[in-house]
Length: 232
Image 1 (tube, rainbow, N blue to C red):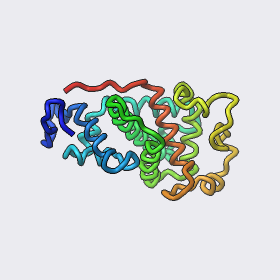
Image 2: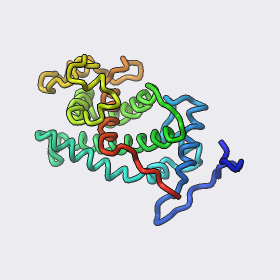
Image 3: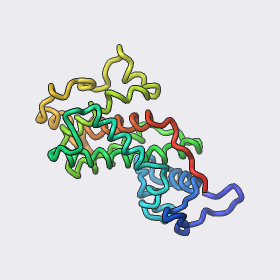
Image 4: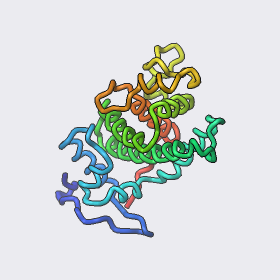
């Protein structure tokens, strides 16, 4: 893509300001849209955008507005809704770290999605396919399918502030989009969850990973209606 004046976007590494990479918001959006044009949205990842800009993925992460702050808010609210899960509970510490990392990733995806949307790109279901694949990777770090289902069920209890985007899911009289929506976790045996919600790239699209992607995306959207676009 070219700038409005006809010039080609610079491929140099970003300048640094106060130890943080400085990227142009338009450059990030153009890189994201260029990647979509080449590979399709399901292939869009932070790594792909970074490659197109010829920077490291860390540069993209640093550029996202306050992703760590939003992640901390997400985890704090989630833990408050989970009184049996405390940050000091050793058996659940790995799961807590998993939620932190998930929130960080989705803050980043939300930012890339927002700048792409601001550029006029309308996304569809492939956006969730892309998220699902990333979450499958996070699950491979140690969260079991039953833990994945736990995360989604608990997050889903307080994301309905964003139901304006998906009213068919959260309307009180609506048919649940999957059978376990709102079902108490205590009623779902781990073996049942792992059987019905396998984490596999070839599994049914309504997997535990898909549910986490769906729930975290809604949750982060409920925290902020629009991440601010940074100026140079």
